[in-house]
Length: 274
Image 1 (cartoon, one colour):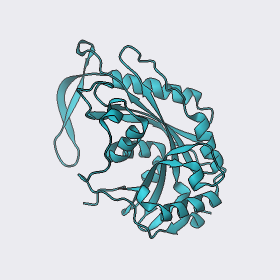
Image 2 (tube, helix red, strand yellow):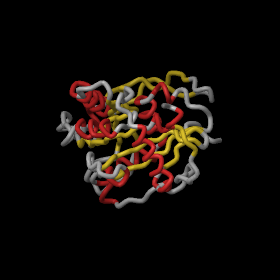
Image 3 (spheres, one colour):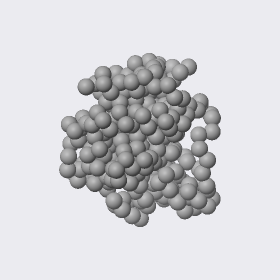
Image 4 (cartoon, one colour):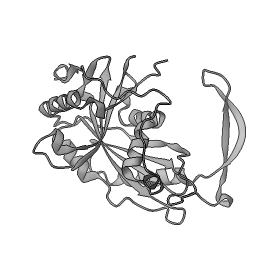
């Protein structure tokens, strides 16, 4: 079955280099932490995306060869790809691995994304929907792997609540580090990630769905004085299990969709090309 779902591709995906313009958006979308904006941010921040992907599909990620990576399509209408299939309405991320010039369709992952808009005063905030029903629809379509990602945005804690945490300094290009004492930091994002991930794992209902929670620092949501993305915190993840109802037919259809719409796919190499 695996070899049937490996096929050469000939179309050219969108392949920006470091520093190239990836997408443009309105200030309003940034200020409101719009879901589409945050989805594109996750795609474009390759280090963050790689951390999430490696947590959701670790066995494959750590075996990927040189000249490999993933092709990512955001916010795709389900019925435009799989005619007659209406649920879920949109697929937030479709992630197709490639090795050289070959699509590895049997490792394709669909990701459902939900936003948690927390605050210092409301740290127990949940998303409006958890996303499990959409994930079940993706399993029904026959995606090999399905994941649910909760992205947390929040204001910052008052500085008098920050805590001293250990700090380390990288000392060479092998990544070795030495102690740099402590640094005072806002630790609320870590607590929010742990709380969100705890809810995800408690309510998932199936081991098939991969789960991830991460935090993106957008400054102060709603503040017109600060619309810069300042950073992110590494995610917590539970890996996907292979879908026993993988659909060879639908993955072949997805391969055709890629060939016809390759510029909608963002190419992210597994290794730095340099």
